[in-house]
Image (cartoon, rainbow, N blue to C red; front, side, top):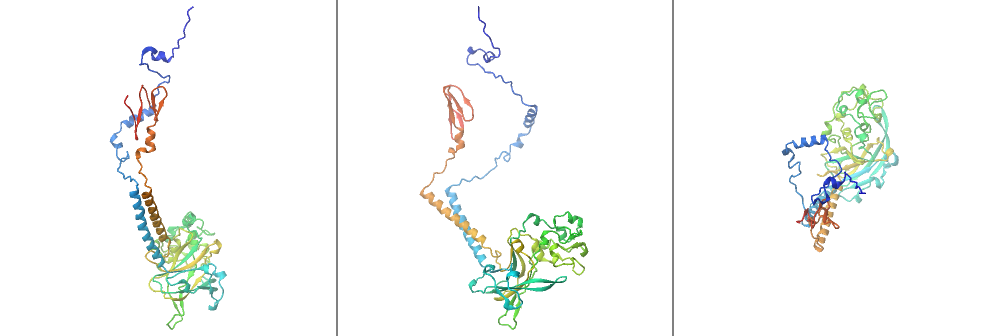
Length: 463
């Protein structure tokens, strides 16, 4: 009985033809042909229909001319020496200019508590050494240490008010200035806090009448309105914390060669603000009964603004303008007084300060700084030191690399040996089939077929 052979109609050989049909046998896949989605066809059609000239530009195809320097010892070593030769002298000049500034810094933060109290001249005592810093062209060792004392006096604001007065005596060993500048310096006071910096109303400072409702929704938060609903003038945190210590002009004691005992070295508050700052303030349109003073101004305006004590003329108050220009660091100096015309002659001086601004509550300090200036500004050796350090490092590195280059030179690299070029030419031979497989996954069939790799591309070799 004959045996029947089962024939599978889905056989690959049946679909593709007889096995004995020769080398033209084609293998068909069972997977149905893929079809592109309609939106892809539409996209390709629309792209193909565009004008190719708009896309094929040097800018879009990143073919713009560019300079790609090859860093070699011949180019890098001179650069190190050039930077060092340029930076080091500049740093020396900056450091020399800073050393020409003569400066006296007196920290009077605890004058009210630590200085001896009394009105007599004999009460003065030497200030602690850590409260004094002097920088004069004459030897600092020959200068007498500054002295201080504290007393209470009655100051007339709207009404008489007892105020602490700090008196400082100091010696100027040689003539200085002009100009002679007097700053106050605060530490640990963060004027750069975001909420603090934005807490003011520019329209109000410009002098315009700003309604209570507008101030209530302004950036002056949290000091916009008082308890009765009146707007503060000026509103905001910056104005409320205004530095309110008052400095008198220094008085020279026991003037030599003259018939007077004391002579005042006049210093002015005019010209201490920037011209650009003065343009930001104007005469106010408020009446005194429209606004209220900020909380920390109650000592100056104990009864609020009145007809006899109207709101201050901010357009003339340069000390206020200087304070409103916030500092970027917690330690800063702001100009308080200046004299641009007269020499401050050598001698013994005394300055009285109305000590109102509290600093111990937040762990800060306050000082006065009497200083001259140069074309580079005040005393600041940091920039000169930084230039010298950078220049010195560049010269040292240049010398070290030059020595390494001559003692043990290194062959310059050949870009044909870069790893990404060699990876493209990696080939793997399939065992027993005579097929070479490249790293890109392409197979080359046929006896004797192979792949030849250069340093840049992969090219099939001739059969």
